[in-house]
Image 1 (cartoon, rainbow, N blue to C red):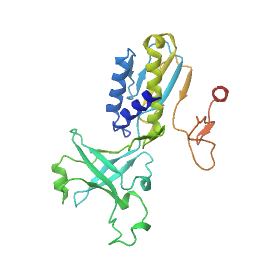
Image 2: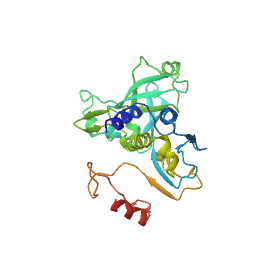
Image 3: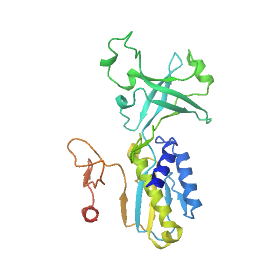
Image 4: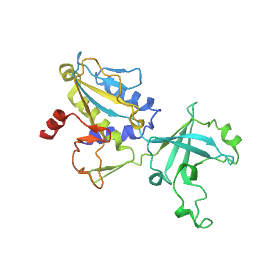
Length: 269
């Protein structure tokens, strides 16, 4: 358990909003290669890991997370943004973030409501939290658009929010456990099995970079694959049977039911 938590901490600290996953995938690749586990990238940028020549089962998780992207540099030098994935803005108001420029420079910022102070804006609490009403305040002395451009920040730069990792009384609290918790377990499992055992097991592991935008697992599997097992977050909330202390086995999602035989086999296990 402790090793899995440490792996989780490592990958959470590497920002990976959908579209900017190269760093976390490189980290995973090195970790596996150092253990003698072979890897390769698909044309779409997913990372495949397996030692068996003809894997039949693939276990898949995704390394990409929710995030944002710079949409426009505002006249006052701060940033408007567009969401990457289904980022719930009320849940991220006041969160710290990192702006990653194309040249590799990084700047810090905060997601805020426009005119957020209740001392001057009595309607701040009633304002709808949506992109048009919020912005990224840079942790830099900027007063106009040109000041920010001099920093090298441009529209299209990625914005990654802090994971806020905590490990308390056996529980992990963090943003982006969807799906880095699953990825950490996958890595831990592969390291525990070891390179020699993985040569005998017809199983491959698939690390997707595009799940949060809906097409992460749509291509790139070895031709010998017969079964696909996806490991992702378990939904917890009203009207569902998921629990934070148990594995959730999903029978369907909004697009339809999953394979009956495989789902039944998982329930029996």
